[in-house]
Length: 181
Image (tube, rainbow, N blue to C red; front, top):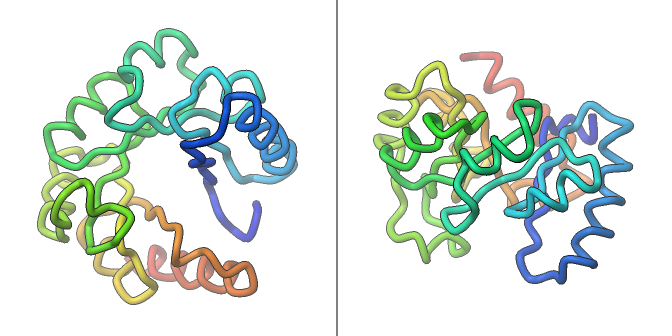
């Protein structure tokens, strides 16, 4: 497992298909030797071509059921959601998990409107349980426990895990929060 992280997503939206393929192939080589699973953002074709574990779909991606039919049951499919309705639709369409957010304020998610908050996260997690809901958006080491208490079965973060020197320690602390609940 790379730094104790279960899942890595390549989220490079502005690369050409060729460059994304090369980056993804290199990442698949690295993660393939570890317990870390690899998802490619939006490009199921590239994910399958490089032997990644699956794809992360956005609100503008191919429909989940089309990806599931095309790439099979073993292909991991995560779906970004911002409402309970989107999360229910993703589960019904064959997703393996949903990412729900933004839970807290974060500049990178402002285009999706106001943060959804812990109350909405709890509603989605409760409604979909035991289906996995992953919290995203504005997460810090100080609010991860609140997301877990609200029912999140995982967390997704960029900024919090951006320091390679501290990544293993932060992941260890997050795992301890999950173990407490």
